[in-house]
Length: 323
Length: 186
Image (tube, each protein chain N blue to C red):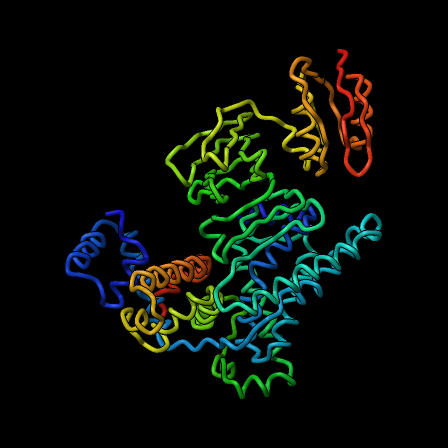
């Protein structure tokens, strides 16, 4: 009798259950001591919460409080390296958080906790200890009961390091996909061009919300999703370049120039004008670690004999590749 | 989960510390308020505890859950606070807890804290869920009446009530280890 849960028990305590449901509950209670214990606990809460008087007018300003607690974090720990840009970050965080709190108070409905990497890449620890590294622009949203259900909404590009828990799976919802894991490391990208999921350790299940297609991904696998056609591409080997925002590393092995450019656009948030010439596909190999875009473009010019104009828009002027 | 965050804080992770703070601050402040009867004093107590946790993070020992640890620390600080003459008057007037009646005051969370904990758990529920829960438990309304008043389906009321009880049970479960039989206490 697996369907007996808090909801049915609460209904029973309200006296709103049917005769059939009452019988089910009684049978379920006979089944085990554990069931009885759960029932007694809920019943006890039900009875003891009768006549509670919650002071709902009392409100606490979590943001202001954090700002009082936080300075003791900064001063003791990382003054030297943080001192230059810390005030800017703190100021922008205050602006974001104050905005968010104001938004909270303006709404009557319960709102999720929402974190947005507005100005730079950001690492964020969730209430269960799992970490998410967010590329600038990424948003994570979850409700107050996150620690119980481990369910969140995500958009943008993020790398998740999920604390293992067999009793509580971790679920990420994007606009199109439901991604379920137990404890593992992987990225999720909801940007149109690179929509997909890639796994660096463990197992991840990805399901299409619009259909029933479901894939199980293991370490070093990725899958792309076409958000317009609502279809998955084939399973592929993981492309570590997706994690550039976290690793700072880009690696190309005999990669067509058109793909190299897409990766650079995504990694550096720039537009690059390029007309692909089908008769002479340019293939590029190279590895960059924390290399500025300009230096990468220099390398492309040299290796492929290109001419790249760097005005407001970056334009690849000639692409007669010599390889 | 518990250990993971603790280890991260010990290693100096501010974001892990912030996660614990975000998770517990408002509930703890409300819990403290129930003891000291003053929001400012309540906030000072809770903030002070977080400052101390960070300052002593390297030697931090948490054997029980975060919940049990934090609520215990807050109760302890509140009791110390109310011992001071200034607050004692306000406190006695509020009659949240009549200390004088007890010969022995425990600094740990015990069964006498249950009603405050239940109150805090309800306060910590998401707004709509709290509203529904209070209509049932404060006003004594049946699900059907709540559904009618709020113009929502009975199924929604049932689900919200179930989730509220589930949350409260999981929050109070953390205290079961230190107070066996908390749910059975009269």
